[in-house]
Image (tube, rainbow, N blue to C red; front, side):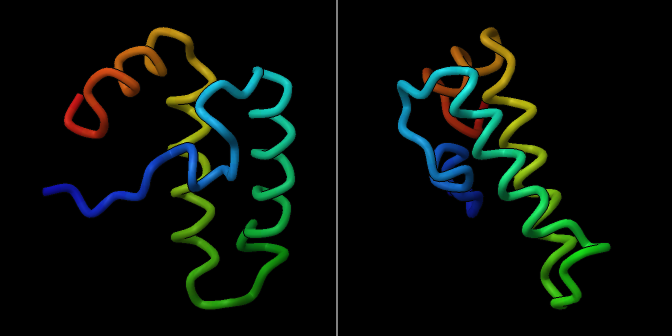
Length: 73
């Protein structure tokens, strides 16, 4: 069983979000959780999680695979 959170939940978007919505949500969260701006202890972990989610969801091929198989893909 995977302990990773759903990428859509991480970015706070729906499964049918447009590329513009994904990018906007990513930028907002990346600025909020960037380790240089946010000095909390878990900022780096959150930032990496946000980046990973965006890398998958911004690529149509990866998104299709993720939607079909989840994290196991």
